[in-house]
Length: 414
Image (cartoon, rainbow, N blue to C red; front, side, top):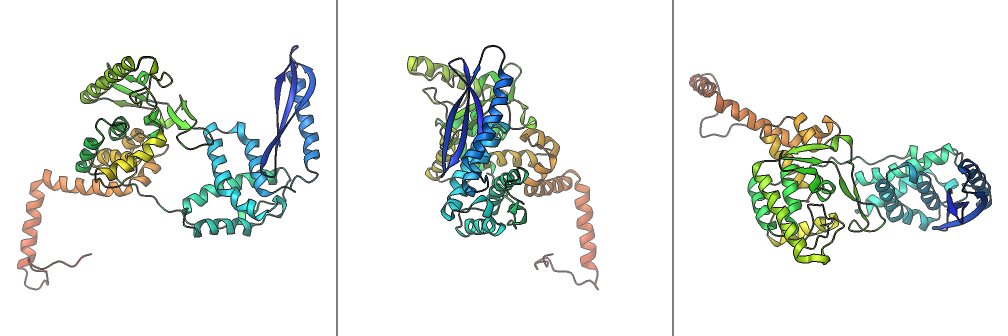
């Protein structure tokens, strides 16, 4: 249960919220305290008193509620201590994935055991719809919620601590070859996907960063692009609904500046002119809400993240291109940089990773190819070393007592 202070008719009211039978309930209670006269402290004291009183009225035993109801109650408790996007992400996970299972079984908070949670994870994995990584996401929500219940003396101990979690699978991102990337750029030319694909190819940005890229962050004179804002879904609907621009990055490390080449500058100037032309042609019909954004269609509407993730695989199939995720263009950008001599530290700064270990872990498979290329470059740069190797092999082949493979035989693989 939560309680907020509201102003109504120049008086402070306290609105309490709670969940009952899966539905959110609310009640407004007048305090009689006037807004004028700097009475906010009195209103806060009244809020606490009313909250305590109604907690007793709603349930004599606060643990005598369904676990599924408690999950929603806990979420409202932490709502103002987490980011809005995080709140809605938690809410979708709880309402769409966790609660349907527990609501069906009508398990109360006080009766919840470790084996109930373990059975839920096993059931989710057996359906084949989720991975071990997704189970870890579920567990993070459940563990935090039950930790709060334990701290508030609603349960004796946290049963989630006893659960055995599945092993996380190590994800290896896919990436395009230069030839495949050229074919992709040809395929998206002139479409709504052109600008998002170009930005992903050039800079390896995240999808939210691409859609959130603004003209006021680009300086065509100094040839720089400042990456700071993102567009995210903050509502309860699909990723194509309830979009909001955040003028801050995912992490401090995500704030970064990209240099622009002459060709990039020329492309961006042409794009800017095209958008100005569309604005004049559409006149009053042109959308003003996303006026300063790069990723807009001919009517000024934002090219939404949900559209990109759905349209991208369809476009690949239409043009006979190998199936990859849109996010794999970020991996493609990173692999090109690594294979062309970028250090891990440079790549960390470029990709906006929080730690160097994250960069090393994600792109370990690309590093091997880059190192193989470095080894070959050593031989190419120092031809004398290759000559010495050839001479040594000739000497070994002439030795009578050595059982070496002949030139036309395959050497055993090690």
